[in-house]
Length: 465
Image (cartoon, rainbow, N blue to C red; front, side, top):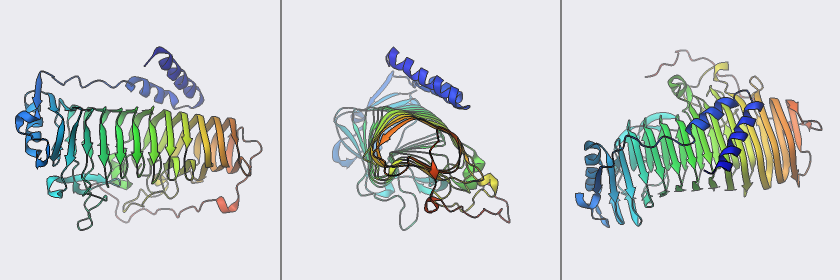
């Protein structure tokens, strides 16, 4: 990063801090982790070529045993690099252990086996709950100092489609999954997944995805109850959310209380054909906070470029989100949707009462350029008992067909909104207070959202079990 870029970024964060009370926390977190610590514990004195362990790379022979033996031996000898030279390696699931770099050379492809028997069964998180399911094609559990580097390819099996096995209702394998890991780097490689999430870090700390091509038939990267995460220079082609930030669902996740926090997403390009470029929620029962998205391009979205979503029964919060220097085009529904009333499945054990009403606060959108978006902002699905606190739009330019619809917001600030082509009013509101909102018209009754019934406390209080 050159000095000019670094200075500009820090200036932006300082400005954000002056505007929103909690933004200094975001700035400190992002500056502290913009360059995650390298896998310092990795000892590159050990170098193992998988061919020396018997891998064929002929695309037909199952190389699972040879590849796993190479990974295990590397870790047992203190760590280092496992080299996968050019070739097509057909393999079942592989476990990566601490202090290991998996290096996929130019022309090397790991191809996932088509038989589900090749993937271990364990407890996995699916839709915010822990259930019985299959571990990922590449996975690590309770490990540290892991690197997966290219320029090779990681390709799941096209025979494994969908997300849940019909017969058993078990979750199908993701492409890559890191559970309770520290110091993880995935960089300079191509990934291809078909029916299930592509990349899923869970309960991890200090994770970086850099210059990764994510081609997925479902979600791209699902950051789940992790902290200190950097996603930079990545290119997404997905059939669901390119990136999803989440922290579990219902009373189970609320009691576990592992938020998704301190996330920076920068210099990425997003193309989604099923949902949003970045989805925040709806599985957010432990909270999502301190997120910075900057210098990104959204080229396609089936719904909205950005969708912030949760519902009563989730509880917790979504707070301290900053989006800066973003180009948005090719979206089917709009630039931004905010919904804390009815997004996602209601949990079997929701968080009851007012505690189950999520809190939204401190959201900032600056230097946004939109091109022919159908709707600029849809933010009417916000609970009146807990209005959104602190929403800023500054330096928004481009073209849109409809303006901004908003309800139940305190601390709205509109500044330098120059969007042309809008049919009707720029801003329609109900129960909205703030600055720069002169000229707003009343929100039409047809645009107001239905408020769900309160969630009663269960007869038997929820306990983790």
